[in-house]
Amino acid sequence: MNQVIQADVCIVGAGPAGAMLGLLLAKQSDLEVVVLEQHQAFSREFRGESISQGSVVILNELDILDDLKKHGFLQVEGLEMYDQGDKIFSVNFHEFPYEQKFIIDLPQPVLIGAILDKAGEYPNFHLKMGATGVELIEQHGQIKGAVYREKSGELVTVNSSVVVDASGRYTRIREMAGIPAKIEHFKRDAVWFRVPRPEGWESATRIKVDGHQHLIILPTYPDQLRVGINIAKGAYQEFRKQDISVFYDTVCRLEPQLDGIVQQHIQSWKDTVLLDIFTAEVSQWSRDGLVLIGDSAHTVSPILGQGVNLAIQDAYELAPVILDYLALNPESVIPQEAFQSFQARRQEHVGFIQAFQADQEKELMAESDEDMMKRRMKMQMLNQSPMKVELATKMAYGIIRENLIHVH
Ligand SMILES: Cc1cc2nc3c(=O)[nH]c(=O)nc-3n(C[C@H](O)[C@H](O)[C@H](O)COP(=O)(O)OP(=O)(O)OC[C@H]3O[C@@H](n4cnc5c(N)ncnc54)[C@H](O)[C@@H]3O)c2cc1C
View 1 (cartoon, rainbow, N blue to C red):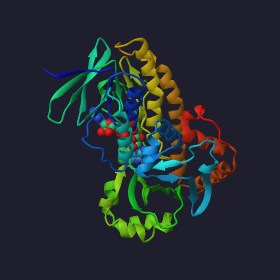
View 2 (tube, rainbow, N blue to C red):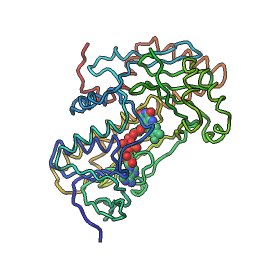
View 3 (tube, rainbow, N blue to C red):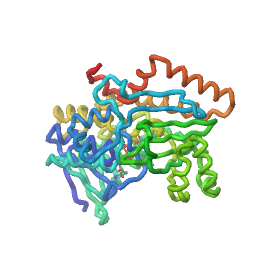
View 4 (tube, rainbow, N blue to C red):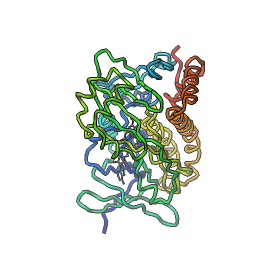
């Protein structure tokens, strides 16, 4: 017989979404919150490291920003886009009208560690590391908990009022719940690598475009750049058969400032990582007793690094729904209707991000001279438009901006 644990909330996955939700629930109530994480540690590579302004506001509210300051992070102060070396678009984050103006960049394990440390201050928060969610408990169409497998192989049952699937882009929980997702593979993947940041490099994200190729260059804590280059979907193995000098040539044509650095620090394909780019759209994020958040509900593309931001803001929006329902109806299964307005609110913002990213990807793929010219003109017009800061503010702060006070 499985060991059995009684809880109010069982969260599967301690990424940014699951860890943040666990903290918010444990802090604001005496609900018993169990968080399952399949890994024993958080040493992850090449995950979202950029935390957008809206999430920085939340981290500040929860006193986590001060802990992150003690560790150290990089402040990203703008975004610039270049076409064949000409700057065609830029956003200066100093112009944002709120107190937290900048993206912060730091390794994801540090962020998650800080959130979980804070959550660990509450006796009703229970983190289970090395615990893989393997089954949902279903009775009469309602989800009543989950079963996890410990590293020893032992199975443990968690009975709960709600299971939150925060298990990321490769979620199996969503499938177990029978919730369909529309998976759309982008026509291109990205190859990522890291190099030291050259002396005097500005603290801004750079997008360098030439024809249908582009680099995304992200200043990264403490003194690096994370660089992504697009390749055709599924072409990584073919790409790796080429001499590495072809890769150097492409990178340096797009960003001449990396000449010398990329050759010195990327000595073989092993120093690169593939990111398979796909999006997942889910039309129903919940069932009786279960709700999805973060990548599991909406995998987005890495364009403008919004994955972590959306995950944290989902948690922030979902916490009061769970708290309110269980305050009035303790120990009962949370019905699907209770999650509808949460989903509608989040979907509106996620839809905006997904549409913007799809549009950007289409622009970046422009092949013909005419399309490239149109792209250049479109970005230059947007650069002059008063809509620019408004659009960038919506992207950076998400719906959190509705609660913020203008500082100028
Ligand atoms: C290679 C890569 C590069 C990325 N680069 C960027 C970027 O540059 N910028 C950006 O904003 N975003 C990036 N992302 C996306 C970003 O990391 C995610 O959007 C964000 O982490 C989503 O948070 P989440 O909490 O929903 O999911 P995740 O961060 O994926 O967390 C899910 C957690 O659930 C755990 N888990 C999974 N299944 C189970 C299970 N059955 N039982 C228990 N635990 C389970 C996982 O181990 C993981 O810890 C990248 C993602 C990947 C994979």
